[in-house]
Length: 263
Image (cartoon, rainbow, N blue to C red):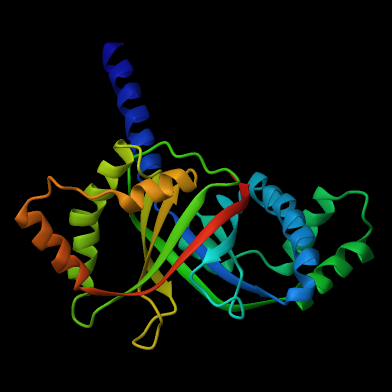
């Protein structure tokens, strides 16, 4: 009997560990909306929150975020970032087709007829453009209990590993920068950090190879985090940081506010 109990406990612990280590896959869609259509699009993304919630309930996705850019890009390029979360690379690549989205819209808005639902999608597709889409795989993240809710801030840092230093850069992020971010979180200077590798697009002409997400609960935490300087850092640690910085090119940094979230 004791042996069976131990096996059950071991199985539960293994299952919990497996869930905790489950790899996350994300699709980043950078959205451009013409200035005269922004208010219409705000209504559309609120509708999308309800649609993606249906997709979550159906087990098709793990979550969805809608971020409004505060800085980091010319507004002629894009103003919003949508992130859809998946637990499987095949599901990520397949995504949600228009037929499935319409099906979820009908569930979320049972008072709309088929023609009204189709019209909503046609109008939404006409008012937006997606100049960039990135398919990402999470490589590492901090240990924290950060709560994703409207109003939190994120810094999206697009990186490109220098030629011949791809592995060196990834090692630096996981072994040098991750502990630094973990320490900042424990000091209340940051909420969450995640390191992602680009799955698509690939090749030497791709704009980036990696992306880091730095989360903050509000502007106060963000600015305190920016002002923090670790005076206890040793010369060896500073050398490791500099070596890591020299292994990649920081292409862009986007500061954004979370407006809608589905979890």
